[in-house]
Length: 272
Image (tube, rainbow, N blue to C red; front, side, top):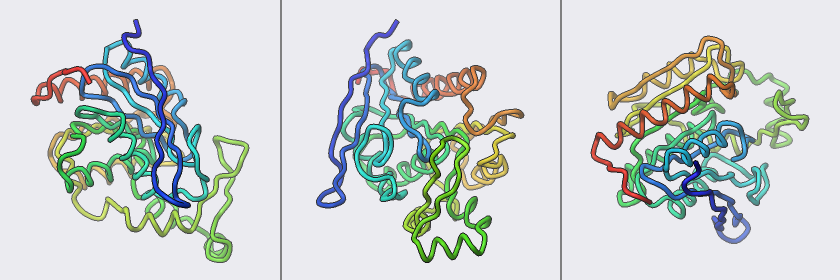
């Protein structure tokens, strides 16, 4: 039974030429809220986001999902997107639509966004408290660690001269655009260059058959996480999507375990 249906909303982030309308959906319910952070070129209507929304409705949990600028139902050009801009989008939506403590569920690039958000939250007190991280096929620092080492001389020249690369996508008929600004801004947002203090439990689910994010990358991320409680689940035949029924069940259990851990740590299920 869906206790509280989702309600659509939007807000404007940025000003002047950088202003863009960000679309989101929120569901009222008990805290902690689950907040979905999608991946590069994905949107809030993907299989995992839909599944988590249904789970939140069934369990009476608060829930929020949104589209970054240049994605899905949000405004702005995809080519103008950077990690900094998408972190700003995420922070604005959370401030607007999440009233209590939150568990961030970040998929692929969304895990990078989640880690930057928790760093910012720890640096600036008084905002939404992040009480758990669920990272799915996490791809923090993907521009530096996963892409740059594989760039050919021709690709580097194209990036320098044209300002972007247009690469075939395994997930769309349209090519994926990677801009020079994305790579340059990524350097300012690197998280795997030292300890990542989260102040909350972290659960990572990673497919070992992931063609986009090697499972070794997830294990490397673990080495930067403190001992606040890190759980890693490797799915031997799991791909990057992690959207099969058994993958979704695994994600569901992990999300509910983080909810329970947050409540056991002193974050009661008050309605938000």
